[in-house]
Length: 156
Image (cartoon, rainbow, N blue to C red; front, side, top):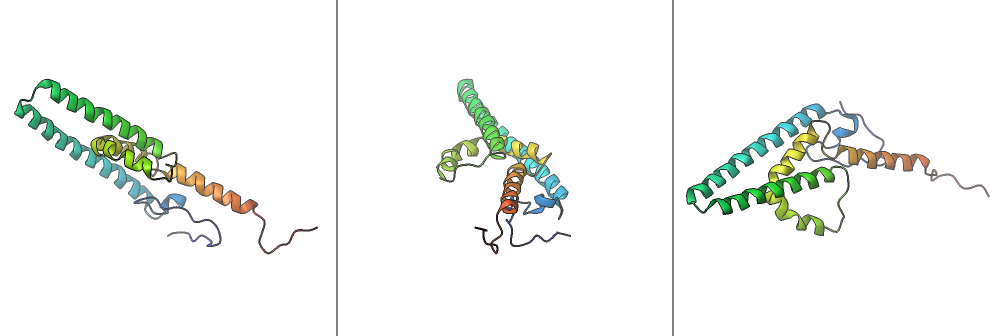
């Protein structure tokens, strides 16, 4: 059963796959977190399997160990960077300019396993991005609580 919040105050921002269940940890929040963790781990494992097939194709093509090593190091570095940037994105807002997301698009495409593993690890403790959204929501509630009511006039 979800609790109703007054419409006059700030509205919590939704998190993908969690909606606003992160506010009160209701509405199947624990099941959603378990599903997010399992789904991201399963997707990372499937991605690793596909990469394994790709590297097997490189070995079968006999292009040389140097090129295979460069490809392996490239995927490893991109995965580490994607993990780090995804993890950082759970606690800080990205700039609204939109340029940063486009710059990292190829990094995330190559290092998708790192991003999925970051999502998995964060899902073990909270909904990914919950701490950021909670701090912003609580700050908005605090601002509303300290704001002057609209119907009252100042004493002069």
